Image (cartoon, rainbow, N blue to C red; front, side):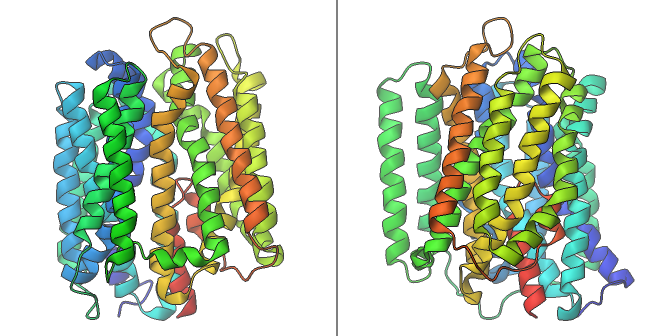
Length: 484
């Protein structure tokens, strides 16, 4: 087993940070590039929605399966396959001549990213001595958080100074380095007790269901015709079949019995509501700043810095509060503060200044986010048995991704958003922020009704502080390290 602080440890951390970092980086840089991509490829709101949701559909559906593949066939092997696949998909995105090709590339990116994030944490857990795993995960999450923080700046600079296609090309050298380091310095590992069964029917049904529902929501805004109706029916039927399949499969990727815990179910419903609010907000705020207020891509990315700063400063304190009082209080108050920030964002439009309108809204929004994320992760981990820690954290991560997927598809439809007019997103932006605020408030109410006032919660890690994308898999790995 590798000990922290040795040269071998530094190589393993470097490989895993590079691998998962390109997935985190890609999730932040693409948002900033969307307006420019839309102009260059001549696509409207529907195309931009698919550029985001094409990635989220496959990532959400295959995330749980991705971790199982590494346990069964070798974590290093699957990690390298994920890196190579992500590189090829990124190259395809960067060379895409039209919107359809770009969306297809994004879907492949999502599928291969499902191998990278759980794979990186599994490699750390398997490679490091039990006494050093917590420090290793802390180093991984801290360095990985830097990728998420610099993403908007890097993406904005690449769009303004070079070309939006380099938002995808930047992944190629990073992935090449990661592959070389992994093959040379990362030991292979697998779970000898892993079940020799993969829930492929479950993964297929989840993919079909999510993709079909997203198609019906996104395409139905323009013209809800027979094709959209069929997609809606197929999507709902596939998701119902997924639940039935998981209930009957001996080794499902989603064991339904974990939902018998009221707190686990409540925490995931809170995640669904809050991250539905967050997914649409992230998508639309960047568009409004560039199209409505005339910000450049790099200015739009830099304007979101207060959120990252607040997460860095306050998330650990929120986690400590959850340890003392239980997660119910911060999980109730945090989403309500997020809702208040979204209501302030609803006032942002053409003519608004950053200091008077944008900054106060982002500060309130960031305060709510910092109050919510770490206690939410802790509540999930505290609500499942030790044998289900990995599944429980993976489920919560998948719920957050699905919430973002549905939000990007649903929110513009609910408010009748149209990019064809002048003045940015028009009145629809304010309406979208108010709807998102409603979802966030619902999340706070669900937490109040379902989460216990007092609970033993795991200590908060740097992952909860530095990963505003909310990756409970990080906390799960550190929780195992603490237990060891």
